[in-house]
Length: 419
Image (cartoon, rainbow, N blue to C red; front, side, top):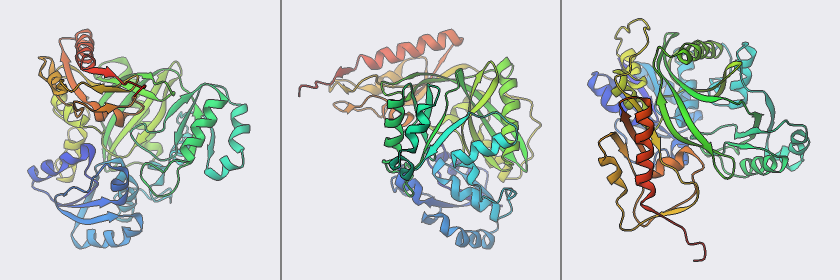
């Protein structure tokens, strides 16, 4: 069997070793979107056969796949979703029933419309505005009748970049105008701004893997978060839920409904939803694995992950029936963040926070003497550090997470704006 691996970055970087361990031949494609977004910095990539790929290259790539007997396409990162989904359809590995070449998996307005049309709950869309719409002032009249707060986000993006909650017409105008006047995260066409209702409730994430239309839930987690000074949502931590928790059953049933609405058949999906008194509501979806190394941590806790399940499917190993998962420990991922700009003291060593006995693993890129901005996105947190912490129970995990933050905060000093 042979695999085409598209954009093995973020969590996808770990596919190389897993595919080799499974004895699978694989070929790698790096897209221009990965380079434009910075998900890839141009580093050497194992088994790279096509570089700087764009959707117009899909015909050549399909011919390559047929010549090499490729029978599985795996997407490593968000940047690769458009090309990978189009390739799956052309190779007969995914549904072409919608005749959109897989666009519904990455174009947010089309994503929400497709799911809504299937009778599955999504946020109410208040408007979508291009730069031309903004120049004509169309966003002003729409916002004047909106019920605040509302969410403003780019129509295509990743890592919560540009996503914010606004409380007034003025804030909404500023957020929309910023999106349509800023280059897209993945380069290419200028993004549009999507305005949606703000759904109150706790945010959850459901990670799934599908093969031949059979869907499996490999993890359900919840986020703790807070708003930044400009309304963007900053993630504090992510915690895994037990399979037996009441929320898990509700969210699992909802996630399967979303996958069926999209006619998803092959590969990983990372789905975010808000749960309120009316049930789950889709917030975002990526047809790729959970990023930032999350699947390896899920594997540590449960013995499985999206990465491992996709490789197993590609290898033709028969998957057992869905029976849920069992957490082997209480744990969370702590996302370091700043409420205002700060400098890491020159005499500090931020990686020392990883030496605490409750830390299972982590990466702390923050460097002494470097000044960092207020945290506005998940990518900003990744520049500071993500740490995998454990505890004897959920309360102990929270206590350890706060200890970790205090240790990091003690290494910071405020930025002297006078200089």
